[in-house]
Image (cartoon, rainbow, N blue to C red; front, side, top):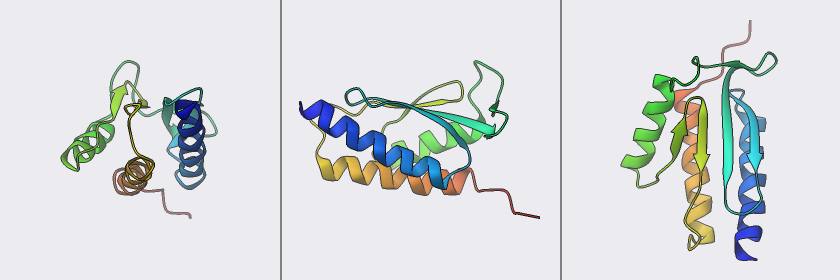
Length: 114
């Protein structure tokens, strides 16, 4: 039950990130404490940041910065995998999502509008 509850909260928070970060093309999961974020170069065309199965350098840098801050995210190609331990606290989860928000803004700044 806790996994379902926190998983739904995690999914909603990540969907909020999707609304703010154009690099997030799709968000999948929410059935328990597991979410997959697909990063794209262009949300409209779903063009990947790098050819499969390569991990884009900016995504590697994001994961390294998160690890330096004490948060572990996993990648697979253009996918960012969030699978916190089932004992994660609500505050820890919120802090990790806030960190991800800052790192996305830093490593994938939106293109300036012309």
